[in-house]
Amino acid sequence: MDYDVIVVGGGPAGSSCAIYLGRNSVKTLLVDKALFPRDKPCGDAVTGRSLGILKELGIENKIEEVQNQKIDGFVASSPAGQRSKSRQEPGKDTAANGSFSMTQSSRRQKTL
Image (cartoon, rainbow, N blue to C red; front, side):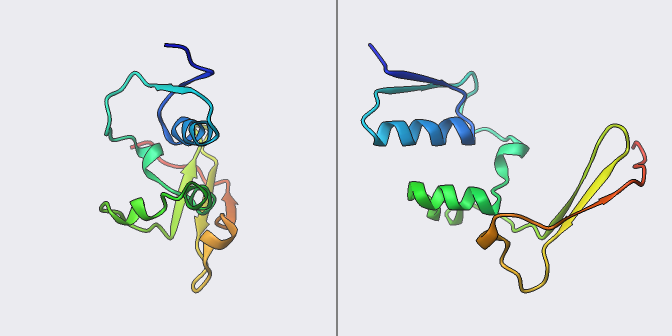
C-alpha cells in the first residue's frame, strides 16, 4: 500500500496527528511498537490545553467513558533537586486557560 504520511508513535501526539491528517483526506499510516491499550503515566494525564485539542477532534467525551481522576496540583522535580509546584486556585477553571499557575522552589528532594 502507498501512504502520503507515516506517523511513528501512537501516543497522544501521534494519534492526534494521524486523526487530523486522515480527516483531511491524507492517506495516513499510524505505527507503534507497543500493543494498545497500554499503561503509560505520561500519556494518561490530560491537561487543559489537551482538552481543547480533544474537543476540536470531537473525542473529549471519551475521557468520561473511562475511569479517571481529576488532579488539582502536582510537584515536578529535577535530578539536581529543583522543584516546581503547581496547584489549581479554588474556583478557577484551569481547563479554560489550559494551564496551572507555577511556583518554583529550590528545596532539594530526598532520594527515596
